[in-house]
Image 1 (tube, rainbow, N blue to C red):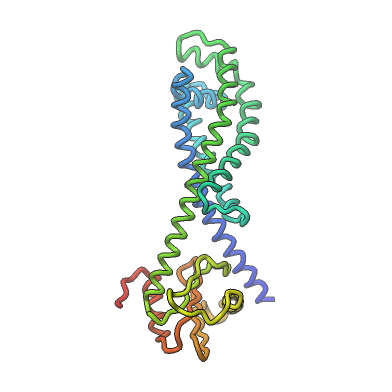
Image 2 (cartoon, rainbow, N blue to C red):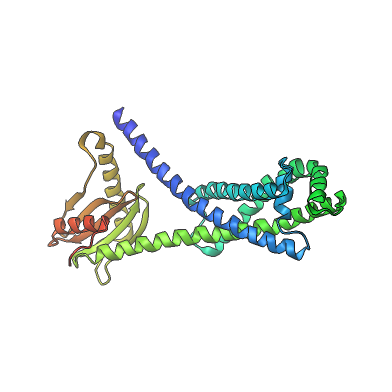
Amino acid sequence: MMLSITKKRNKDKNQVMVIFKGVKYGAFAGFIATWSLSSVIIVTELLLGLPIGAFYSIMGISLGIDDVTAATSTAFGLHLLIGTIIGAAFGVIGIRWKKVRMLNPYKSSLVGMGAGMIVWLVLFLPITAFLVEPAINSITTILAIESQDPVSSEDIIQSITNITLIAIAFHLIWGAIFGFIISSLLRIRLFRIKQHYNDIVNIDPNITLVTICDSDGKTMYSRHRQGVENLLTSEETKKSLEMAMTGWKVRSELSHKIGKGRYVLAEYEKIKRITMPFGDDYLLYVTTEVQANHLNIINRIRKLEAGLKYSR
């Protein structure tokens, strides 16, 4: 009973870590994409001969704010906030949806554009229909007072219609920027993982294989040292890795009684195999030659993990 509870807790913890990473990446991408889109909106207003901030002022007045400046500022702030929240939501979906290769910037941008269209359909159109259009009279009156020029409701309706149609392009642009940023963040993460591999494999020439997994045991990066003969086939290597990760998870289920695992060493006639955590996010699966000083390798990995400069 206790083991099953601990297993569930570990699984829940891993899920939370994945979700947090998706929220972090998505929120950042959503904020940048929304900020960039606001610049596109300003340029579009200039091209259409509209006052700068017309889009945000209309949205703000629709919320019941009578002062144009306050309405514009509030709508702009809400736009950034909502864009960030939507980005966080799509970030979680993007990282957890295994069928989507978010590492590819082109595919990621296309997925982002699809997400942008969903936002246009599910959020922008209902807001326009149920919030902006019923407030046309208020918008007309407040803008006329602010500009001290006559403003007709027909002009406002036409502006809203134009904005609604142009918003399709806006959301496609938002999605493309969002997808590209998500892809860039994931590629930066992969680059760092590859750098971890290079740092670890260079610790000792007796290291033959380094595999970096996430906390769920999913392989993030794996490569043999160049020139090293692999004793196992790719399928056998995969099976050996799965066995090691399963063993580590089983031991983790007992951590509430015996403490967190530091490393597991399996010594065979031809190789040594080390399994150990690397930071909060990764697990290492390292194989070495039999003559390797495994304690030295483990200690130097720990120093590397802590960001310390280790001696060669």
